[in-house]
Image 1 (cartoon, one colour):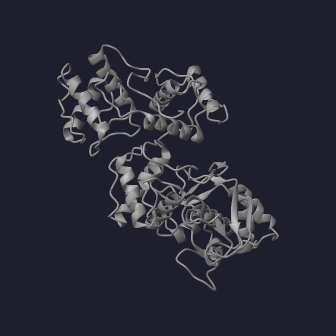
Image 2 (spheres, rainbow, N blue to C red):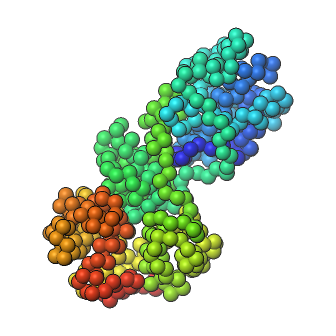
Image 3 (cartoon, rainbow, N blue to C red):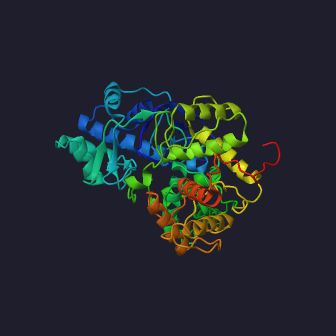
Length: 469
């Protein structure tokens, strides 16, 4: 399912037959599709208020199919069908009525939604004579228009008075919500947040799927566990990795349990569809996202001779842009200096490749252990948790306000309390979660206190790269 505020796609692809029928697909500009459907569904001689009400419903219906990826999430290569048993009538090559064309040109970027919800309303309709339904009656709109009702009043008559008409929605090129590469442990971004939101809602209907406590956009161990359980429930390979098949299945089940493609939709709240992370990072930006980017580039630059290292400042300046360009050159990407989806994906891959090539980390031999690539929070366990606890325990000797913790390898309440105390000391958000920034600050302080120096830039004694990396 797409996230963020809905938009008007430049084009829409129509399947000329039932969903499972082997038939032609036609791709055409969205306004032309609406004109065709309106000319096929309603009569140009109807009162203008009735025409407009029906066209609003036609637009909203099509956008609901597009926004929820109703067909694409099920593996189809189209957005909507021409079959009135499933969708609305479309006739390839038909004549378009002039007055309908003019109205569509004016309002094709307006749609109906339920107040408090984001998604275009599934504006079900029928002709009201040979077929009836819970939604709009096309012939009934004529009588209402003749009684003097305006288009909004006609729509409210059928869909309720808690609807709004969103006007002048942006028009842009649509792309599938699946990012084009598998999402797995350590990936941070809107794609991960989308997965977390949807799995948490799905778990209400399928309680075997564990809740993900923090919808933070970072693919942590709890997210991996929820994904793996989802895959088991729905007979997918239980890898814990969100490939295209898993992405589409999550999207389809989420749409189904929330009834987003039905008139009585539960509704998609703004906070569920919000985008937490900037899509592309570029020169002039300043944020924690930029700081994370710089950290990864600094590490990669320490192991790849042709990747220019960069200082970790949080500001995307010329040095960072040049480092990004050098990375893109080495990895065969367009040298734009902008961190888009593909560049971010390859940066993650390169960083995790370095982590996997290193000897097992050991904080006792004079090196600074790299960020594990996965945000650590309460409930996590493993070697990196033990290293974190070793760092915090040593720091406690100088800063007693930071709790002493035993290196058990389990991230429990005591460890969370120690992390929170450290965050308070360093003016970081006090959430007890070890992000890249928190790990970097803890490891830097540990290095300063124990070895008398900051061990960055990252390549330290005891680290070796295997193979040709």
